[in-house]
Length: 278
Image (cartoon, rainbow, N blue to C red; front, side, top):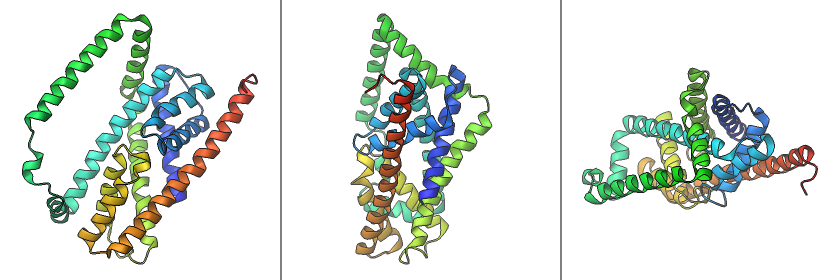
């Protein structure tokens, strides 16, 4: 799992490098990887703080404007969201009966997917706020510069040199994520009998849980995935809880170790590049 995890993070670093090339910044693959891992480390303590910290780390290493690199990170997240939606769709096709029963057991009925007036009102308010923010940004020269840089980074996804290669790396990231789950599930006797479709469903549930804005998915992951193992595949509750805690702890340990090492290497490289930094 550790090897597969590092391969997925490397693929993400290469994809980020591809996004920065159309806006005029050719960065090193190693520096991109170091910044990605520093971002993952920060995410464990500050939800979504890693997106900002990885841009700042890359700025120190490569002198890339943070507003532009942050725009590319947002573009990444949009692409990841599309793949997540595709993943959930395939999971529902593979295990429709079990997943719908699981949602019903959680109190989610067909009516729960209806668009309520509150959702519509919230969407309208969000659009109005965004329009006001854009208006204010364009009135202030410094803020306008930040906004233009962010927009340039965001639109870089449409200007990558090889769109097919970009899609390949995006797909590779999620395929490797899947095999991370598959490797650990097959390592335990209690879960080793689960088939590919079952592993795929649990992977989808875990991905949704990790998307919740909590440090490293702690709490949400430990609730949703064990519940899925118990309700969908009749795994005894103590075994399900133990499996998830070991799985998540090992995944977190990988991020901590590689993140700390990346932070130290980044600091050494930055000091070597700028000796005046204390």
